[in-house]
Amino acid sequence: MKFSRNIGLLALAASLWALQTACDDQYRPVANPIVSPGGQPQTSHFAWVVNFNPNGAGTTTEIDVSGDTNLAVNSMGNGSIAEAFPPSSLALFVANRDNDTVSEYLPTLESAITTISLLPGSHPVYLNSAEDSFMFVLNSGTNSACPNGGSVSAIPVSTLSVSNTTCTGPNPTIMAQSSANNYIYVVNGDGSISVLSPAGPALVGTIAPQNGQTPVYVTASVGGSYIFAVTQGGSGSAGTLQIIAAGATSVAASVPLGMQPTFAVVDPTLNRLYVANTGDNTVSVFDASNVNPSSSTPIPLLATVPVGTGPIGITPLQSGTLFYVANAGSNDVTVVSANSFSPLTTVALPTGANPVFITSDPTSSKVYVADKGTSETSIIQTSNNTLSQNIAAPAQQQPVMIVTE
Image 1 (cartoon, rainbow, N blue to C red):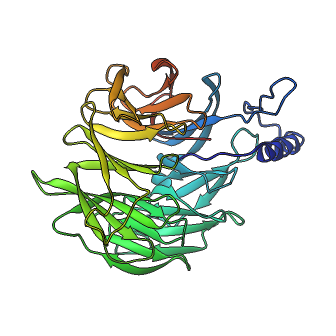
Image 2 (image 1 turned 90 degrees about the vertical axis):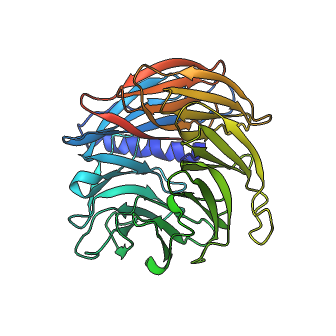
């Protein structure tokens, strides 16, 4: 999850910080924009790591991209597990699974952390939004509004309180929202996909499992016209990529994937879709600029790339030159050319790293890997593809997700 902010937003953030320091004695380290001498101001970039604590309050670690510096550690709620920014927003939202809350605050500032209460039993596990004015929270548990399954709670950024809770199927795990029409698609534990309209939101339909395939991941296309659902087949069967028109309640087309696919990411620079096939150690690369569900080739396959053992995450550089694949089985990262689709090198992670998440910064200079096994965030320099730093999470905590800007 990445987005860019202009220097005007950073100036606003600095003004808010000044006001806060005048009336609050609480101290947290502050990162200030770095301005190049005698020229156009440069935008500062940061990475935020969510650290999960199985026994209490989690945290977020704020890292300065340019210096690989740990700027701040902020306390969240119990069982912090996911994070997201609304588009064009300065506010970071963090889902706290184990005490049914969402934390919201302005990173790099001394601002207070707002705790947003969900209905008891909600157990939030994911956050997503394609709208500036809302953050949507995916709840895996049952609550008083939805006693028979999971739910999605809408939080207006203007009020920072839940305005609506919509029921989904049981045990939902992930969701995606279309930026074209704001429809939300939720993957449920029973293999169905719940479709929510932007009004409310409200449940408008459910997509049943197709041909024995079980959805495990969803993401939206560039521009939001389509939703891509990654599915797994039964024992010994390959997965599929299902294409759903945004707003529709049925699958328009599907194409084959590798074995046990688990993750997908859209490359907005090259307009491609990358899918990690964890079961056969490959990545499927699709041309997402040429989607036509009625065609015999609904989405062209550009390459199937061999990578390390057990790929679980992919991040393309915004420069469009490379993409990086985190491999949980071999505890390393495969560096792949985005032009030739050839693996170029492998970056070893610390012994026992067990990576669970990977992302890159907007300057394409760094790649960040959440190493759950060693409770560290590994930082890779893309200029020479070497591991430059390992930043430890607080004691008894594990990094599970990273966002950059």
